[in-house]
Length: 504
Image 1 (tube, rainbow, N blue to C red):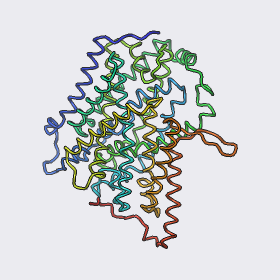
Image 2: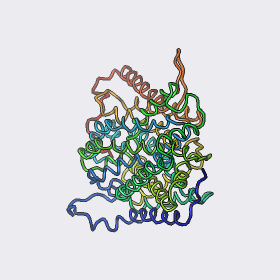
Image 3: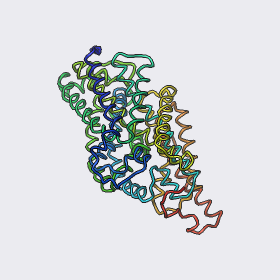
Image 4: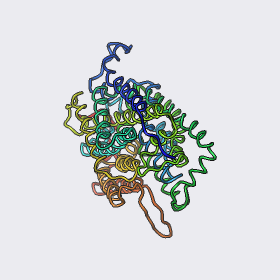
């Protein structure tokens, strides 16, 4: 089945919906004071207002801001592309989101309370206050900054993909993605994605529900769709369900992705912007609703096979499916939904990374709105470089590469909340070992997210991020024991600080 070519209707609807979202979010600072009913006596610094929305977002806004991080180009472009290429293995994103919700409920309210009481805006702030180490603070900040670059790159790829599907080629689609993201973030701050996250989710709901209803009808029902998809899927070892050989990589990718999900600067920014710990708990209870729609989105990869979509670029699977099945004008609307679905979380990612630069990497007391905006722009330039120079086979590999890096902050940030006798030197040693080990494996494996291991009679491919985290924790615990023995330290000597006020 051949795909339709986009016409002026598709382009017109895309431009109208996409730029209306950008204008609405970019001008929020001008008209928001008219709707703000908070007492004038409540004030926040301009930097906190731009980077954390004044820590005032209630359950409704937090729902779309935090939950919306699961509806990115990762979800709408990368996951269906992986399903299109590998079959059932691409559905590992479903258990990963289920695993992460209890983690949010149990851990994130505690982190929010610590951040509010100490005036912290980033994970690195919390770690420095806990352990009193500038070096460890820098390690956590740099990990967050580096990890988020390929994730933003994935969003740029998402916007570029739909612009290419509209008939534009060369560097223009990528430049369009970069400029629109830069303008949106620069002008609106965190209030822009907080406001337009609602619009983004509604647009994606419409596009996905239309796809899961109309496409199967067009293809003769779900039974016929699955049968056709099975015939057209490329032959792979073990078949297209999660075979025995794929069980370990499937499970470990889901687990490592769940651990990494809320360590990223952008997801933690959404958490810290909430107005209360109860707001976070309420969201953790209802966030599984997002997983239902995620599963429906993943099915688009199978629908593309059933619809006869053949493309050498897996990222083009969903746009080509929409062009084939839907009227041109509605395909343009769906493209706008995908582009906005990349724009909104990419903005939060850039803001979270800018917070790390201004709060933790640059010298203290250097925070300003202009500085944060410039830092965010620099982050987006770095993400642009990832698109150009990182040659990942699948777009989803960019997100998984970031997960390998951000997982190395887990011991300092999450285990640091526990009453363990962890010391800053041991955590730094573990972080360095895990980071070097994980990045080394990624380089050797060509940016693949899993690494084959074998010992005894067992052999399997395991998530690289989980292997690196295991090395990190092992080195941290061994070094901690060695340091305690070498110094003859009493428990109080190496106990982390209890005061969590921000240092500097």
